[in-house]
Length: 406
Image 1 (tube, rainbow, N blue to C red):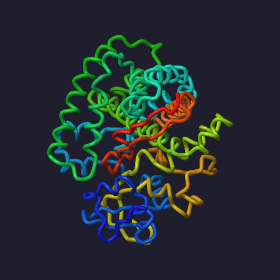
Image 2 (image 1 turned 30 degrees about the horizontal axis):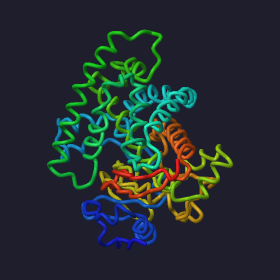
Image 3 (image 1 turned 135 degrees about the horizontal axis):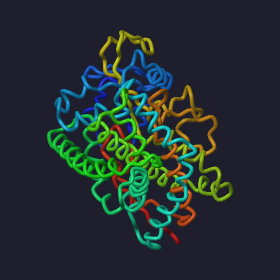
């Protein structure tokens, strides 16, 4: 087992490769010894489920607005600042309310279920490209391609224009990691600028041709453009980038983490062969056990007390979802992957008004991607998995696998 980092020396700005491979012993120790930890940079880290859940649900005392926090990090007025501050996940009502309603309606369970045939086609086409008995990279060749295709389709971006989207997404989200350096800052700003330039032309064409019959995600966003409480034209561009980034990164990690876990567990594969409908529970347990999004942030708006600790107003809180989802006070035997775990009140998609708007899409894509992968390649094996060096998102940068046999 990986050695846990003692709370006294834990610093999220200086994490090791060993930690990225297996952070869970450290989370376990933090929950036990310092569930509300005051870090060297002045922020506070929460690792217990109850505390994280409380903060997520209380929007009066804990704000998602990041304008004050992001200004010194990105530079007020920089492309990254202009992108992240109006994003759905980083703002509060009233902007959050109207924009979320437009997105939430388009991504409702009923509307998302209608996407299933399209997701099935994308998955089948990708599986057809995986050669029998030959090594492939599950991330590049499969997991990353699925959400890009699906979210791009929701926004109406033609296939021939989708090539640069993943690279832009990784650069923009990488700027949210601890210890951002000058190179990462420059790369993120350039990616936002390139993305905006791309979308200005694309959305301009769509805006001029919009009809009352159009009911897709981009059409809904265009209709709240300029409405009081909605978003102006520049914010609309950033909401589209946010949707592509969030929909891509979380689902790529979910599929990659799920594939690795299932390849290592014959009991899970046997369960799905006997009961294909069990895939719903498998996906929920992947979300808990290896949460694709490992943390969230809030800022205190009042002096508060959490877990017996007094925390002043204007303090930055980091909610470690990966730790909360293995809390022994909530989950029995939390270090065991249980595909039939019930109940499973994980926080992988957050909670409260900032619950992930795309959770229905992510679940649909993961269910189809994982069950079809192991139907086609039932004895898939992991050769090597390389964890991405990121604290905010947990996934693989590369996951080399081989079908044995096809």
